[in-house]
Image (cartoon, rainbow, N blue to C red; front, side):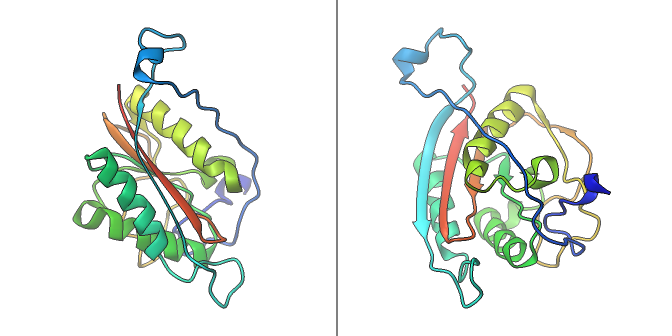
Amino acid sequence: APGQAGRPFDQAASGIVPGEGAGFLMLGTPEQTEGAEPRLLGHLAGFGTAFEPTAAHPGVPAGVDAAVMAGRAAIDEAGVEPELVVLTGWSYAPMDELEAQAHAALLGDRAADVPVIALSPFVGSTEAASGPLGAAVALRAMDAGKVPGMPNLAEPIPSWTGPRAQATIDHAASSALVLSFSMEGSHAAVMLTAP
């Protein structure tokens, strides 16, 4: 069943589903974007990046320290906590385990309450495009006030402390953390805020 192939953070995840996708963002200074067309969707409020070498298993980071460092840098620079999170969601057990740990470390007690969008059930693994695509999806979700659920999350892995709802929810978020979680260990994060 192709629609159930992408299963991030689920015990039945059977591996990466190749996908295609791209995100296109137009950036400008506040002076350039005031009254501009197309309409301003958000502000780039924080950024972070960090690197962690791969572990003995090729193509899997050794841990989550770098991802947490990148996410925390973006959150701290923005000065607000995220009300929405966009994750890569690889559907590959070693990566899902690490990304779930990073998510839990970044959100702590709020992990189950802050809506999450995992991209792979919708478009497959877009590799390097996951960051810009995630930012575009976060801006659209904040603008629409709707967040798609976590499709195909039937049996979450034990380390997944995030939300488990599979249906779309109404959610008025004014800030979003986008974490681009890389197999090679180069992680990046941005915090976006609503205009």
